[in-house]
Length: 293
Image (tube, rainbow, N blue to C red):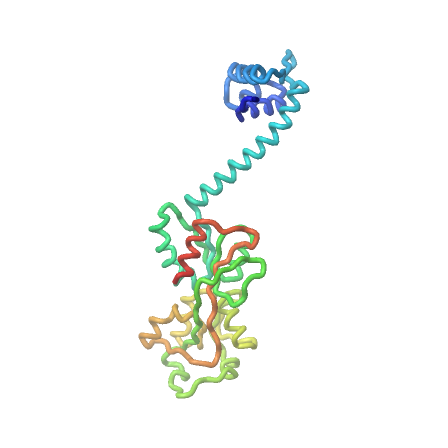
């Protein structure tokens, strides 16, 4: 039976072929030249082969040495690939969880989900990027993050998705707005010609509202911040379209009033990841927590 050969001996043979020098090969591997020479003699003796021819001009592989070197290169490549893969999995389990999330989810949902993940996996630290839904999809697609969360009626065709909840948009106005004193509900046509305070194109909020309205809305103000959106509504800039969860305290306090209208403004909350990848822990754990709420 042929004895097992150690990987460091294979690395030595490959390094000798690369440098044509036993001394240079030893330096690359961080060992002394006598130790490299002893290792080479041990391999040659164990298998009854002559692998390296040494002369004053350097060290070159014999015919048998070239054959062993060729096989060794394939073995070492596979071993290095295995080690890199294991290291990547280990780091993924131990540490970074890159997440991109749309504004509403990042502000009102993710903190609770991450808070529930923390006791289960205290070693995991999440890095969160907050942006609109279109940018979240781009970041996931470009491998910048492994996991994204969006609130959008449109599921990206090249992404794997899981619905983790739902959200409802509200059309809100200042308590001083003339609509707050009306006894009838504005029509969809009336809403379509009213200047509104809206999120920017590319956000899940804007995509949901535009799709529900069915026509190009008129703009009083376009913003990329929920706080700016709410502030504009409070100060009478115009009716604003915003996640109901973001304005619930102001609605309860009577500072804002919700305009009830015949539009379906519900939208799914989606976890997304690349369709050609398999989601693993801790990302799978976070998605599971989100889907339970």
